[in-house]
Amino acid sequence: MLDFTFLETEQIFGDKQLDIFKLYGTKCAISDFAILLGGYVANSTYTSEGSTLKDRTGWWWTKTSDGDNDARVVNGDGSNY
Image: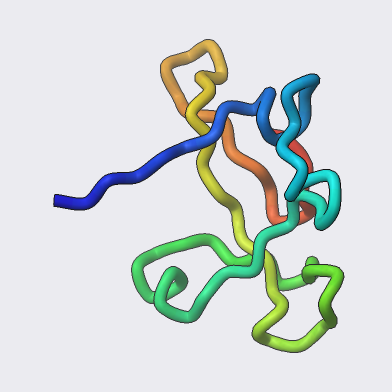
């Protein structure tokens, strides 16, 4: 069985922001494997590491609800959706 830990938006953007996001920001590179599994890849946004295929960003899930029983996501550009 797989165990996943999803972060709350407060840990990503808010007062309880984790140090890793303070250092590197919220953009997240997406792997080829994640794309093959159906992950959304942004074609115009990249991590701060560069602008090659390996630096493309993708959307990722949070634990926080958007109020409509849907999980909030972090966009490929690093913003909260």
